[in-house]
Length: 248
Length: 248
DNA sequence: AGAAATCCTGCATTAACCTGCAGAACCGCA
DNA sequence: TGCGGTTCTGCAGGTTAATGCAGGATTTCT
Picture 1 (cartoon, rainbow over the protein chains, first blue to last red):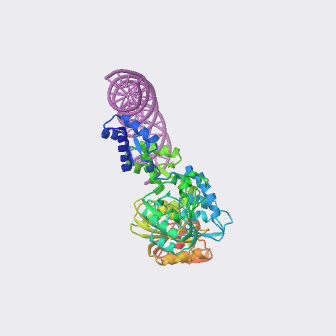
Picture 2 (picture 1 turned 90 degrees about the vertical axis):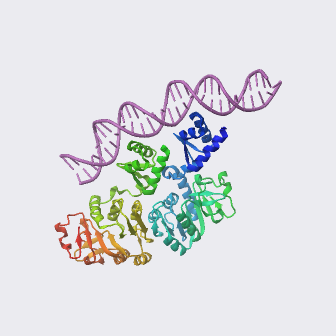
Picture 3 (picture 1 turned 135 degrees about the horizontal axis):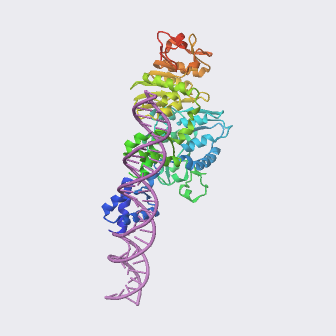
């Protein structure tokens, strides 16, 4: 069996099961443990998988959960700072949940006079600290996963709102696939939020760039602002430079 | 099962439920307790969670509510324990905000199967930890003082609800004046909550007894249960012994 | 206060890892 | 065909990581 064939086999296993054990591969491919280990090493160096004690895991699998807090906090603060200028006095703003948005909510100018609709209780609690911001918490079924209101009742209420700006965090964004997500209900929710706003801004830490998930929310055309912690001129952002999309 | 997979699993559980029990993980992952403990230790060192006796908690969650400062916490815990038996499987429960209610929400039986409506985002977040409880967050204008939804939109939604039990914290309660409050809007809100429920329970730490405020919500007659941290036979409670009011 | 659950420490075992080496297979080239 | 050079593979050995278990200490519950 050629090395390349083995590599392909490994990658197939990984794509299929998100993981693979060294010991299994030894049996399946009928080669020595060392060979397998060297294969995994090589693939890991090429960045096609991540090696762990006992085997290897798919790269995308890792990013399944968001180890946010300490790690990307600086980035999120940077994003928040760039987002603030978009919010002007008197605006009606609609926001999602997500840590980026919460960081933003913590850093608004003290004298901002605006109306915020939000589906996230965390955001509502943060916003309530500002004297001059009116906060409307959109209620409904409460999602145990994403800690936001969702479901038909929320969609209904959203349909009655006409906001100036919609602020959303990112699950995944990709030049071709646009904004994508894993959960059907959250997906519907985000679509409804887009429909309820004149403009939409996506807050996105750079590591979410060029990733995509199963369900499409909207394409890049529907997004007005893309805000990352990177320099707006950075090369990583080149694929996202579409006419209608302002990058900051 | 690879270590990394276990870690991911743990973090998913934590992101989902804000907490996780060592014993549960032992069962779910089918490894020894020591392994789980070491995993938690490791994740705690990486700062991804905080370890506590019996399991671990989400970090972000902790920073959100630092409940160490809750006033009269022991009393509130005692009240919570007495309240739990009122809530039966299948019930529809309507709750207010307030620290007593939050303490209660933290101490519900893990296997309780019920539907909770609440106007408090804090309560919603707590309740979301329970697998078998359906949580509906009632949305509307968000009060900066009392951190609950209020206003016409809330009253409207309440009118569509018919709950079995309403749980309310206390601002003030008095044998003659009944349940009273200071804020007009909150007052309206509480009235509406009473109207939406078959029965009502008042959670009340003893120092709120025999006090009254300007605006009346309801008289004692309309209350079904009065729950304090005191012995139900205590003399302080004598003035409240009305036929229709059960004291616990 | 006593029982039960949980935690910690040290130890032994097993599995997985790494390094270096040597033979096999393959390559290009005369 | 023969010959250096390269790559791939397996093996030996010594090292590290992971796990479970025993015991005793600590915490929590009642």
